[in-house]
Length: 365
Ligand SMILES: Nc1ncnc2c1ncn2[C@@H]1O[C@H](COP(=O)(O)OP(=O)(O)OP(=O)(O)O)[C@@H](O)[C@H]1O
Image (cartoon, rainbow, N blue to C red; front, side):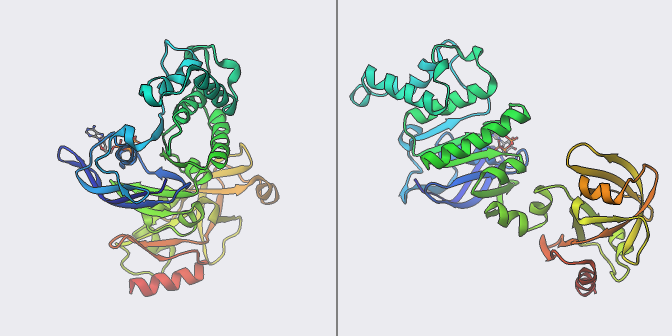
């Protein structure tokens, strides 16, 4: 099922949660709606489902205007963050529910329902839990059952709202992989909401980045990460150090009047030296975190007192270090990305420092 959202707007009272959104989702796509809290992700998902009425615009399913269709008519399957399983029903009954409540004419027979439910439980690898109650399952198992239940009615679109949000990191990781496999097998158009950029970039084929009820960028994970459309997308996808105004001037003596310029640098794009060079800025080490395969440093610039983060692989650190808290190091900023705050557009990207200085100078002068 392909979905087209055309000029859709939705307000709650005087607050516009979705502002004139356009989005086209291809049949079989695996889409993440990604954005900070309150950006309108859930509202957009509920509009697609037919759980909310829109104020303006249209929604098409396979080219047909579905704007006025009910939830039932849209044939969507849902999975929510908080497992909406029926507590008083067994796992089997939970999965069978959608089939049992079908109108008599199209309701499968008891035998067919049993076969279908057992097939789904096998599919989500939990057939041995058929007779248990939801309270006897782990959070991850409950979400897998919630998915089996959503799939029982053979939806044409699968909608998931922060499906793994309430689970711990390890289970979440397992379920991400599992859901991708399920999508590969079934190829149902799937849209999931998340505020976790790692989850979106890892799982989705298409990422839709939302902010303040609008879409900031649509693209593959590579596209949005490598070619962010604006400052919001850049800073939302991964850690960044932000420098503006005086800190950019101090860093780049050629730059004049920097009010509208913001420079972003990812922590792994800063190189630390024990000796100064003409491109480096002195900074004192505030904290070193050596847990895991990446070593993270917090440093304070000596010229502006600003804090910033640096990351390097532990292998690299072994060769270059050890560094110590309180030590003065020299930070060289590679790949600074400069945004114009007025137009919210990228001025320069992925340059080495020398080129950036000239780009900034020509932009500012
Ligand atoms: N039923 C409602 N009545 C009034 N305001 C609402 C309603 N539903 C959502 N909103 C508002 O609309 C905005 C968007 O909410 P929405 O739940 O879509 O955001 P979200 O991006 O999914 O956020 P989160 O990640 O926190 O769930 C928020 O400011 C929210 O307060």
